[in-house]
Each structure stands twice: as structure tokens, then as C-alpha cells.
Length: 136
Image (cartoon, rainbow, N blue to C red; front, side, top):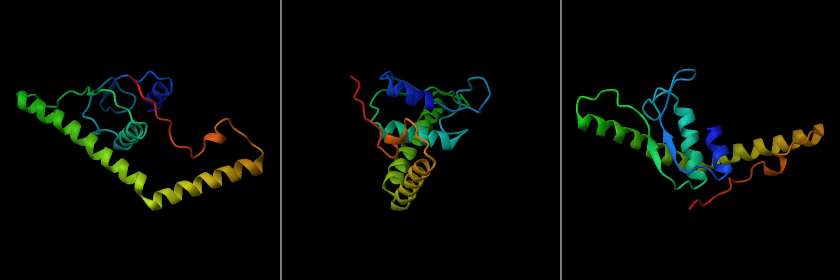
């Protein structure tokens, strides 16, 4: 996720391969969202929040390849997971309770930094929406 955000911020995210894997292992190319649904959600949310319009490629290997239809079903499952998480990300953004909690956290965080005298470079960006880039 952080690597994707850094590529986006640098204006270098032209394409993304989407899959999943268990941490600390070789490149497993598991079905999108099958191993770590939480990080998959945050990745989809990030891509949607910044308005990423580039290609989304599901670089995953079907668990069974009994025939061509089985491979297509697997690919459809990856796309379905992405679309479900995209819808959940939109619901997250519209949820009043989540907005209130994030506002409280942001305010508490700013108050803590002010009272301790600690200043970071990210203070001014706290709570600011993600910048949208339009790649051609």
C-alpha cells in the first residue's frame, strides 16, 4: 500500500497489478482479497479516493484450471471483490459516525502535538483530503 501511494505521489503510477499473498512469502499471486482483506480494502479505497484511472490488472493465478471457464470465473471473482470493496469504501466515506471519529482523532492528535511542542512536517496536512492527480 505505501509503495502504491509513493508511486502515485511521484506521478509514476501508470498501471497496477492486483493480487494477494501471505506476508513473508514468495510472490504467490493469490486471488485478490483472499489473504489480507483489510489491506486490500485500504488499497482499493486509496485508488478510488485519488481517482486512479489507469489499468487495473489482476495478476493472480486461478486455484483450479479445469478449463477456460474456470479461469474466467476466477478472474470474475477478483473483479467482483474489487467492486465490492469499492462500494464499501464509498460507504466508509459517507458514514457520519466514521467521519466524527476521524475528526475527533484529528483534533486530539493536533491538541497533543500543540501541548507537547512537537511539530512534524505532516501537521499541516492532517485531515486534508488526498490530492488528485490526472495522468494522461
